[in-house]
Length: 213
Figure 1: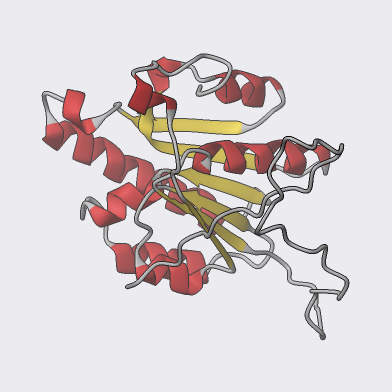
Figure 2: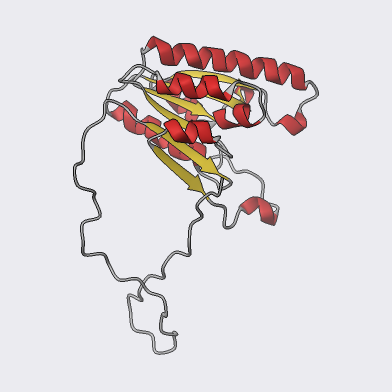
């Protein structure tokens, strides 16, 4: 599958005149036509996938967690790779706000000394996530880094896609992780590919609490 890539962002026009500054050569004009399609309709729920190699997939999903909480939705989060011992900031806040939070990850696979245990833990996590989806007690369920379990063949991708497609009508899903399988893309309503242009890691900068976790 050929994935779409993001083009260069247009330069913003200069706000003040600067005789020394070069004239922009690729400035975009502000749109004047309404881009919304005709025949818009409401849907009882949607499936959102955040994939790609860029930063922000989980952060975007957890931003939707806050939005759903503000709408008085029941929310659950299932994390499949991040270790529950990391105590990421969103987990602390989410639990305080009543999010049903489950962490089944053991951390990065390259740090693991027992990959079989990691696989068993991940499969346990998917079983719990499947049960949460089918129970229908939550209006939003975030499946953080689920795509890895599929691409590594730790769980059956066809089963995951079927569970998503047959979910209760009111259950919205957000799925994150690199290399989303085509089967999951096919049953999603919105798919966004995050493209890495530059990352602090490339400059030797460690992950920063409050920014990265």
